[in-house]
Length: 303
Length: 141
Ligand code: SF4
View 1 (cartoon, rainbow over the protein chains, first blue to last red):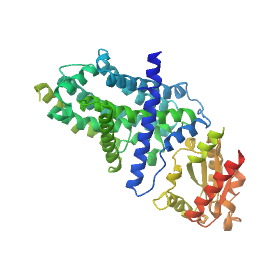
View 2 (view 1 turned 90 degrees about the vertical axis):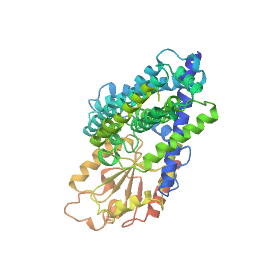
View 3 (view 1 turned 180 degrees about the horizontal axis):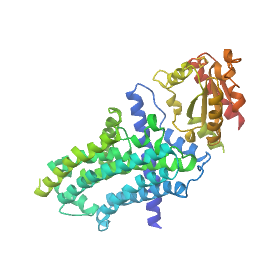
View 4 (view 1 turned 60 degrees about the vertical axis):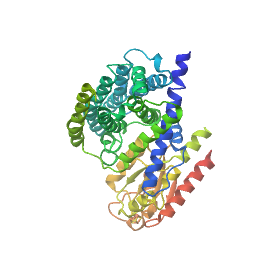
């Protein structure tokens, strides 16, 4: 019963979706202000979701069952991540062995769900989007995991989120060391790619391949994909806060740190053009992997 | 039901189908999204896929090719989907009425819910048309 409550309401689905949708609104509003527009009201994203629930769901001819299942798959696994992260922020000592690795695995599933859904929708533009998403996942996973490895090394090989938090509470945030700072830079870019924001939004490039991976989705499944995006906008910054800025986790400080990360995301988003997929791959496998490797070595040496 | 309708009128996603216009109307449609008029504050956004759209916005006179495309696009849209004809061309074909390559007007292909006349219509006129469309939706209840 308590588990279900955790999963569906408090650190889980309802809470994270609300925060994510509001963060999505902040993003839209700030973007609008940067472009000298007024921007939508704060409840806009909620209304979008409600509206999509009332629309017809169209299944393209010849699409497989995976077309309808994959959105749920992505959202459910993502909520599991939010629940684990939220629980371990509230009670750092109750986390289980190896939950960091579970979180890393589960964080890939939304991307895989998008790829599977797009590939089974039998639309050429969707398959271009799916192939780009696949390459992007291959690109950012390596540096992202390397930067997490740097953190693991820094906290004496702990693969429990709770222990990483404890280590930071005792010895200061990971960000304020050489290896931590390098890994943080890498993780910021990987977060941007995971969220699918400019400059890494080529799977959904509106101007080239329409909505790309989401092109055939309408109604309820589309709403679920939008919710997944919103929850991800809550989960990824929270994950980075836990890994890099875990010294003071009182509610006020969490909110401040979250807003800081959100500002970084929005700034990157609004000051960059979209990269081509080969440029993105080169960026992640070149400089980013190099930086992450350097962070791992520095962490191994104890800096 | 009521909530659905309210959400629909507060978040209109528009798919723009250009059926051989002269492009002036398209430019005016884009003007509506620019900082001066900024319709995103009413929740109106331009989307790239007809599957996401609530409003199908048509400009221009359909010719033999675009007529078929228009019909297909309309059939691909998830219901409820409304059609708005922007510009004199789409409303009534003006001087292309007797042209050899203009088989029919937009409203003979798809059911049109709102006409916005003008050649091209001013952005203000387009916004006024959208307001009328929303009023019509609410009146239907
Ligand atoms: S109504 Fe006028 S401006 Fe619009 S497409 Fe027709 S000719 Fe061009």
